[in-house]
Length: 380
Image (cartoon, rainbow, N blue to C red; front, top):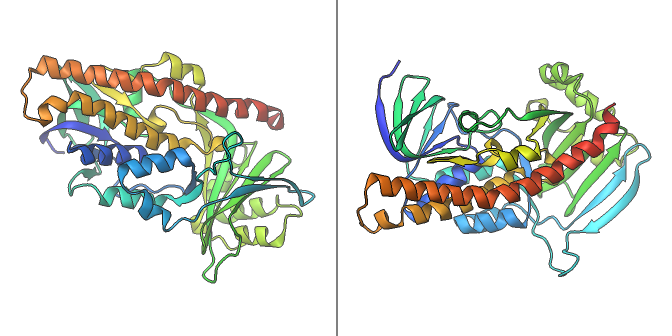
């Protein structure tokens, strides 16, 4: 056990997308942060995710948008099928109805995004195997007690530690709820090129929804969600059965779509039960309190139906850094102030962040929650 004591102006708990984006945004402003990651390596769970226009605006603000665009071609629209009959039901272009402007939609590989964000940070910013176990108040500071006995004093604590967030728990959030749907995610590689074009292919069957979306010319991300959690434990423990289960549900879909699932390696499969936060909790809970706040899944976990989980986490990071920039503006130009004044500015800036993000998060979470409710007859 370590009895080491450390000090950092800003501590971010969690080196996921939200934590890394926030750290990089602060770094661009000249503010150093310390990112604590409980695992021993950079977390890249989940092969990929869909990124919409709002996410690309955030990535541009971070200065990494163009480098990621090169590796991820644009998705131009969506095609839906009825799986049992293999019949195309809907085909739409990703164009804004009122303006005619095309949405920027791409399927972004999670590993590449995480590595790009972390590589832009100064050496030593991320500390691995640093697990937060408790938070203590000490005047205007927060004392963070870690599993190895280390204590860290900080002026600002930002919780980006996911659905099981210790920081959210300290703020008074309830545990994220479990949806009765589960999701399997996978990734297929085509060394010779997949030839799928630039469309998101979506399909529905009895009690399930699935889809495939190209990440680049040689790889395709796919998901499969179904409305029963009864087999999740069995499938988690046996990836081969997981793959067989998905293939058994594909009905009369075209062979090129079935091939995506067939060629996916069992080691690349991930199965999990979906989780979300009830929308009214977003309205009532403390997103920030004093010099502590939460963002990303620690604040607003949602089901993946809208494709906005990672996108909104990136948004959080940009808004949070802008608010904290105001709090640290005086000290950045060498102007001195008392601890009390600095604490009040930090408290005000985090309150501003919480006010701005509360309604945005409520909008997204409540819309996703309606999808959960609408799907409930399938789960009975």
